[in-house]
Image (tube, rainbow, N blue to C red; front, side, top):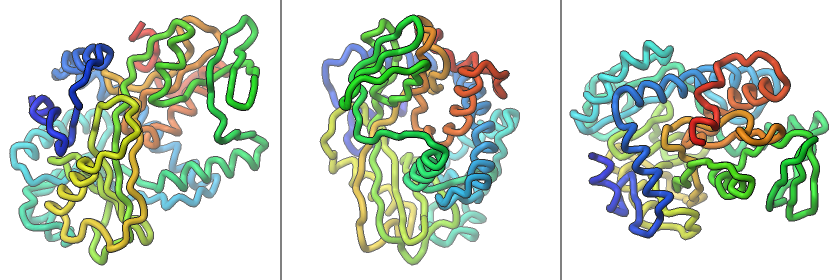
Length: 351
């Protein structure tokens, strides 16, 4: 019901511009049908298994491959100004604890004592002490460095146009010509549905548009990454920089920059933080998150093609689930026993 009140306001955390889009309507209907305790717990269990596995692997990757990406294991805080919203989320902590996700509930007075970067009016916070953070641009660049050093060829600015499954592999058409592969892993994010449609597959993924602003670092910043939960805005301080990110806009692949959405990020941050951004704006950005209606990724072999593998639909947790997803896909393709149960992520649930 809260989402329904938000969805028509351009400044709300969730915005759906009115338009004729039956695929989106079907997606929203399935999503709404799952807004209940049973389905929430089912999705949370699937996400927790992948997130917990990824969390441990990613720490190992950073150490082993010496990834220079500002990786920090300080935890994450959900911060609240609305008492009812704080209480609702606090009630979920017991279920999260049972799934191996540690939580700490902190009242507003104690939190403000710990975090002087916040304005008065904070009613409470929920801390996830096991969380970690990094700079995603540096993380992906460092992965590229490590892979190239091991002989992997990465072709940038090479659009995937189409692919054709064959008996002994897959033929791929790209902007730079034809490629052939023994196995194809399609990890095309929010563009995945269009690519698989031509080979008879259905991936109910909607492009959830998100925005961010990166500035110079202000004098006073939170000591760890925070989610300003009532407004669904994320804030993190890096070396010399501050980033605000968030909002969810279902407007298809609309490539226009919505100034109202960017203003909503700043307004929310001003409500919570004494100094939400620095004086210099470095980047104003948007991107599309691949959202499934059950909030879990699609990982595994194509139901119809022996040599096509699907890895998409990670929503807002692509980096967070990256190492576990990569390991699971590698195990499935090579026939090794996977570390986690792959059943919750199979594409067959949508066919």
